[in-house]
Image 1 (cartoon, rainbow, N blue to C red):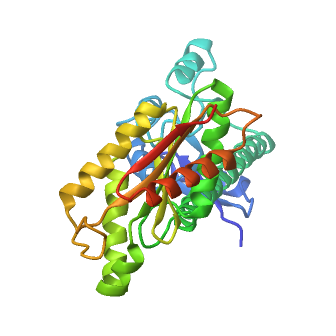
Image 2 (cartoon, rainbow, N blue to C red):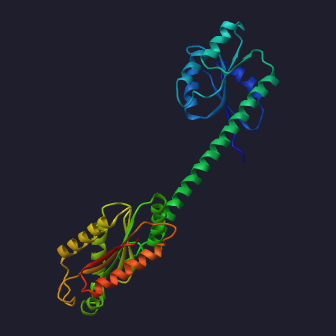
Image 3 (cartoon, rainbow, N blue to C red):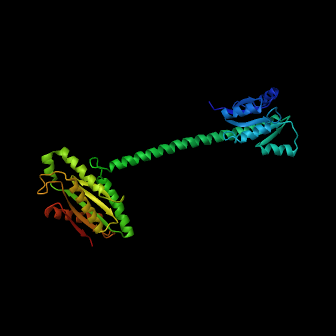
Length: 328
């Protein structure tokens, strides 16, 4: 069932109400009546009227004063007001009505066809406005739903790019970010450094302390790696098992070596016991560090291969150290 449109009739004479009712027989209209300006003000605060048909001459508060007050209230200031009056048609009187906010005049005795036509215009305008408001509300709901879906999508993407144990990036995550930074560095002719890091004798640790302790050590080491990075664009990924990758965009070799030294210093402070790590007695790492100027002639895999080769040399040279090289 369609919503009825409220029309307010304001007149101190009830016989005039009856006349209006006999003319406005549209079933889509709900005629609300007031016998004074004060009553009209109260009704306007509790209803949403499509138009107000208001007599000008009323005791206490006349139509002009009621209209002026309605225009001063936020909720009611946009309700169209048509003055229905038998007073003078002189321009001075008509101008006063427009000054206080009237949109039109009907002079008594009024033509029923004209009254119905004018009310119908405002009824259609009201229905059109309500339709637009409803569509705006529905659009706001859809926008809110889309925003929520986007937030959920971003959350799922962040989860899908995150290693569940260490909270560093997994392979999907670090490859995606690495490729983005590689292209940006190539575009702006900036250096990029990469560290491949492997925990020394981690298998021995797992074998003697258990896999639960091994997982805790992986978390501790990953926290050290992330806390050793000072810029938001630098990131850590879990390369596999106990091996991690650190990508440092816009970083020359000396900057990468500072990060490597910071990692070693922090691990030494942490002093995690590892009796089966050669002569060190604590958890240590080996690192391969490579730096390149990304370009079309050089692929990301080349810097990874170079860092991997340097990591292998560091491990074969006694572990708990790093090897580094610039790719020319």
